[in-house]
Image 1: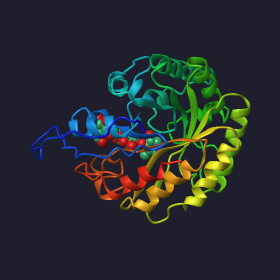
Image 2 (image 1 turned 180 degrees about the vertical axis):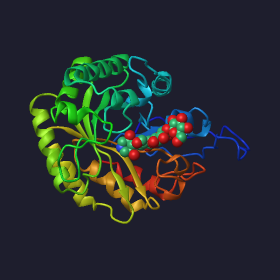
Image 3 (image 1 turned 90 degrees about the horizontal axis):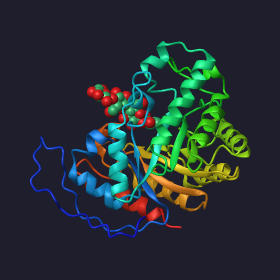
Image 4 (image 1 turned 135 degrees about the horizontal axis):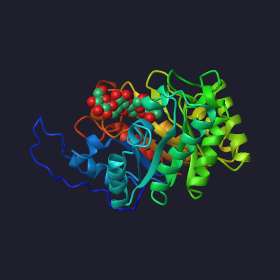
Length: 328
Ligand code: G3I
């Protein structure tokens, strides 16, 4: 956590129900050892001065929640839309925050044209290379970490696809390596990640992820693995289990980050604290990112109460547990 004093000024008085802005309460500087990030959506952040204050002062990095995804960035072939992604990068760099780029190749949020055009392998290969190079070069030097490939595996540990996603059916499982090669060429200084959901508690998906990480690391193509960590209050991994998962990945030589932490069902402080402590216990675990700041804006809906700040932007007990756990 940055050493800057995290005293959030109360800037806005009397926010009406119609006003997207919230008043941010003062926060004590948590001074974590492990950097802490959060996902942001520009449609929300741009309208909410209180949220801007919290993000700028209490976090070290931001991940654009949707703004860098292919369907947003290249909604039509060769038509590029970077306005919202640029705005987030400008906000971040203006406040001394890092940016995690998310994401370049995924089986969801695939642009309509890419599903419809039924490209040959050769054409798709060229489209992939152009997309990755256009996006990464635009942000070279400003976005230092990229989720290059998102969620490549099934729960059973096979490679995964979805209707409309051409990567696996057209290019085969080698698409993951191809994407990483393109990313390495586009920005040799960037940290390249594969980001995966639902591998925190072990099992076939984690085993396949470890194998994939080992292979890609040996080829010099992978720097890190993201464990998304969309956890549930009912069946969270224990601290020991999550730490073992992080250690198994780190043993392949890659960095690990918890990239999308939230806890559906009330954000119990113990679950946040355990996730943070599991990361802090492993030197290769380099950052924890929450998937949003406030319950009001969570992709799971406000009722899931999954995030460390409540709908009025007040820190919940989960916040103290999270920041307290991020000490080495
Ligand atoms: O932008 C449109 C808007 O114009 C329209 O009016 C509105 C109507 O529904 O939809 C808006 O798009 C939505 C977008 O979020 C922005 O709010 C999409 O419908 C919605 O599908 C999209 O959901 C995102 C989801 O990824 C897509 O699969 C979530 O916000 C985002 O939190 C979620 O994030 C993913 C990570 O990228 C990968 N890991 C899992 C995680 C949670 O699913």
